[in-house]
Image 1: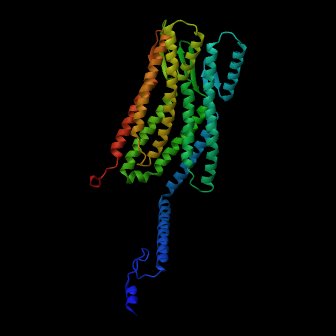
Image 2: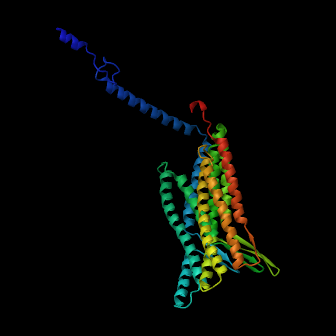
Amino acid sequence: MNEQDVNETSVEQPIDPFKGDGNVTAEQPEQTVLAQTENVETQAQAAQHEAVATVEDKPKWVKVVKLVSTIFIAAAGLLASLFMCLIGVKYSAGGAASYMLADVIKELNDLFDALTAMGNSSPDGELFAAILFDAYLLIGMLLGIGFGIVCGIILIIKTVRHFVSKKEVGLEKTAITAVLFFFAISVMVLGLANREMSVGPLKVTTQYGGATLAGLILCGILFALYFIGKIAENYKKYLSDKKTLINGCMNLGWAVVAVIVFAVLSCASVALAVNEMGVKGSVGFGFNHIFTNALGVAINNIDSDSEELILSLAAQYSFGSIGMIIHIWFIFQTGKSLHGAMRGTVSADKTVKLGTQIWRLVFAVLYLIVSIVLAQELIKTDYEGCRMVIAAPVVILLFSVIGLVIAIVNKILVREKVDKSQI
């Protein structure tokens, strides 16, 4: 062996990262990769076995509660999908008149026939106002039917897959969404179209239609039972984790507030106390009624030279429109936050959000301002000598403040403590 051969032999070979050093064989990289793969599979299997063991370790009654709770919320979602297609209101003025989809369509046809029969004569403001008012009811009911059909189809598919195929398909979340959509659309239709009057012998009330009221009661009961079941199912979390317990209590408090706000939003937004010629009483209106009535009066007084009347009607029309937008925002935002509150009762990660509550307070103040302005304008044009009653907006403002307080307390008690040494 010459010197050149010795030098070539003594040259260090580059170390392959899979081999560890220069003396390993070429077969070792493949063996290392296989070992790592087997290790990952072993860890995954261990995690799976641990999750199964955790489920199996739960007491039998907890499994039963979980199953029953799922059945409750699935039934509530399916019923909500059905009753969304039957949303209606009932006006009582000496006699009860129910308005469901078929009734509204029939009345709209009659109104359009009357409008056509007028020909080229002077426009009738009351007729236009009635058409616009019924058009709002029609849109609300069609919205309910659309959501009801979509939610119903999705829920049927998910229910079958969940109970038959034993797959986790998000059944509970979808069912909760369907129930809250039913609540929201029902409140929207009644709240914005509300008309109430109690002056002497004259009494006019607006209520949920029979089918809608039955649906709200049934879905509400099933929804509450599901809620109670979820709390019972996760009792160990409350006992072992103080943060979860505090957060659950805060979210439960906010859920109660949200339900109360839902109820208030179905009432008349603007109310006046009547005291005329010794006759006492009250009148109340939803924003849609004020909006459409202002348009009708404006059409009937299109040639009026009264600047005060024109400005008042313009204020009623514009603020009525703003009130409708705020009202709808409040309804759907309350439903969304109620959904979050239910999830937060069993998890410390889902807190009552401070930013959302601040926005709610801002909109509650705007809601109050709009109601005061509209009440004052109605007193100028139609109800001289009356006194405004702003109960509903004040209640919404009060509970918005309560929601903000809950969010602040929640943030203080449940916040994560950061180790300053890690900053």
